[in-house]
Length: 633
Figure 1: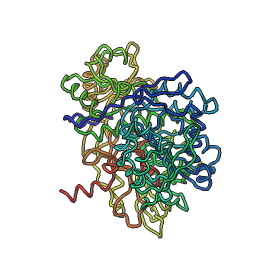
Figure 2 (figure 1 turned 135 degrees about the vertical axis):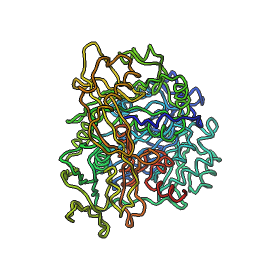
Figure 3 (figure 1 turned 30 degrees about the vertical axis):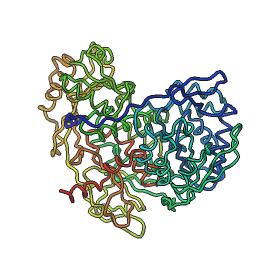
Figure 4 (figure 1 turned 90 degrees about the vertical axis):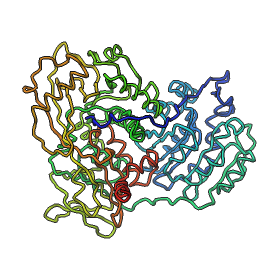
C-alpha cells in the first residue's frame, strides 16, 4: 500500500553519485585502475598475497577457531579477492554454526561484469565468485547487507567515501584489512581521520594488516592507538605492516548463554524478526493470537515493493531504497527454498501526471544518488511499453522493484526456519513479567506462553498494551484494496503506482489500492472506497477498468499501524529495566518493502552484530526517538 503523505517534497542535500571503477586488464592479466594508476594486487599472485598479507597478517584463521562470530572491516573492497580468500578459509576452518561478518568500504566499486571478469583467474574460487556476483548490488550509495554461504557469511558493502562511510558504521571489529591503493596514489584511504574511525570500531584485541609500510601510515596508526610493527612482505614487497589496537577498545557483546527469544506477532514484521534470529542460531517462540500467520494487516493479497523518492525525507528515501534492494535479495533466496513465496521481480512504474511532481522526483532521485539501474525517468511511451498498458503520463521506472503476496512471504520465511521457530498460534500475549534475566510472556489468564531473555514486540498497535516496555505510540490507518478480475485484452506486465497502485493479475485478479484512512479501525468493506480506488486507477491507467461496476467487485480491508512521523520503530525499547525488550512496529503501508531489512536490523541489535544500516538512520528508527520527541516538545 502507498502512503499518501509520501507526496510532500522539497530540495534536499545531494548525495554524490557512485562512480564505478574504470578497470582494464593488463597484458599479464592483472586488473589495473585507470583512475588511480595502480594495480589491484601484486603480479606475483593476488590470491597468495591476500592470504599472506591479510589472513596471516591478522593471525587468521587460527584466531577464529574457537569463536561463534568474527568481524572483519576492510578498507578497499576492490575486486573482492580478499573477501573470497577469507570466505574460503572460513568455510574450511571455522566452527560449525559460526558466522563471519565482513564489512568493506569502496568508493568506486567494480561494475558487475568487471567483477566477474577478474575472478576468472582463480578457478578454485569459482563457486564462491558465482555466488558473490549473484548478490552484488547496483552502485547505490550507502550500506548493502548481502548473505552468502547459506547465511554463514554476511558481507556488508559500504559504497561511498571511506571515512564518511566508516563514521556511520556501528560494529565491533576483530580485524582490519587496509588495502586501499598506494598512499601516494590515494591518500584519503590512509588519513588520520580514517584511522581514528578504525580505532572507534576496534574490539578488544583487534588487529590490522596492510602491505604499506610508509612512514606516514605508521605514524598515523600509532597516533590512533595501534601498536604496529613490520613483518616480511609477499613477493617483491620486502615488508608489510601488522598491528594491534592498544587503546580503549569498544566493548564486545558476549555470546548469550541461551539464544532463546519470543517474538509477539506473526505478520510481516514478526516473521522477518523470527527468521533473522533463527538464521543466527536462536530458538524462537513465535506468539500469534490467530490460527495462522499474516491474518491482519499483513494479509494484503498482493502488494508492491519499490524505492520511495521523497525529497523532504532523505533518510526515509535512503532507508526505503536499501530496504527494497534487501527485500528483493531475500525473496530470491526464499525462492530457492521448498516453500517459495508468490512474487515477481517485474519492476514498478510510478506515474506522474503533474510535471512539477515529476521534477520533484527527479531532484529526489539525485538527492540519494540513485543510478539508472535502480530508478530512471521514462516518458509516457516507454512506460506503456514496460507495463503493457496505456499510462496516464510520464514517470519513473524502478527496475529494482516488483510485487509479492504478503501472506506467502510470511509463510516462506517460517518454512525456511521451521526447525528453530516454535509456532504458538491462537495464543494472545497480554502481559510481560521480568524474572531474573528473562521475560515471561503471559496470556489473559496469567499463563506463561514463553520465557526468554529477549522479547520482540512485532504486534503493531497491540505493542502499546505493554507498560513494562514503555510501549510505542502508534495510530491505526485503515486500508481497503479492490480486487478486479483479469480480463482478456487488459494486460498489465508490471505494477503501476502514483495515486495508489495496481498490480498485474495474480491468480486471475488485479489488486487496486489502497485507501489511507487515519485513526480508523473499521474493517467493514465500503462501497465508496471501491469507487475511489477505481477513480485512482483511471488516473494511473486511463480506460483500464472502464465499465466496471464497483458494487460487483470483491475487496480486502486491513488496519495498519503508523507512528507520528510515518517511520517504523525498530530496535531496543527504552525504559525496559533489565533490557532484552525490542520492537519492530509501525510499518504502515510499506510492510513488504521494509520488513526484511527491519528484521535484519533487530536481529543484529539483539545478537550484537554490525548494524546493516547507517547508525544515524538506525537512531532515527529507534523506538526511543518518541521519548526524545516528547521531551523536546
